[in-house]
Length: 183
Image (cartoon, rainbow, N blue to C red):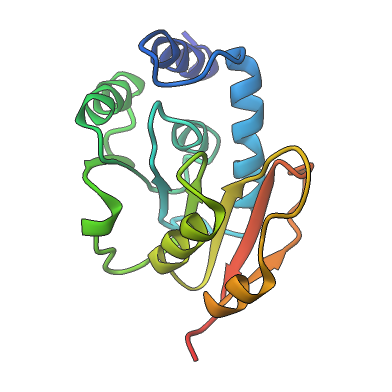
């Protein structure tokens, strides 16, 4: 079985268990690839955290498409993290993908990650606040975007020490931020 088929199979099983919505898996993977594109500036070996990993999107797609990046999947629901651990083992990614069951409020990233991604984690300002706190200065934050509108309050963006940056090939499906140095 090819890696792509194995990834599709894992995400299909995730959907069957109710961890992903009803969109066709091919569309789910295509959307997750916007996160991969948003991580384009993250260098080989850069550590990535997927906040609220749920059924494995976008984290498993990132792990598939960017095997050069260690990925941490964080979710507070053990039913989902147990599933993710099984999928990581089945895909043979245990050396580079870790799964953590826990609430983000109790998670202290040390050292900070090079990138954080979030899809459906929470309200925009909360998601950006949590993600920005997880990455080092110079790190990248990639967050899913709704189909229309700009939901990023400039005052919140400034207060969180991030800057919105353009990312290639994301076609507006994600917002990409650069974590600035703390002042």
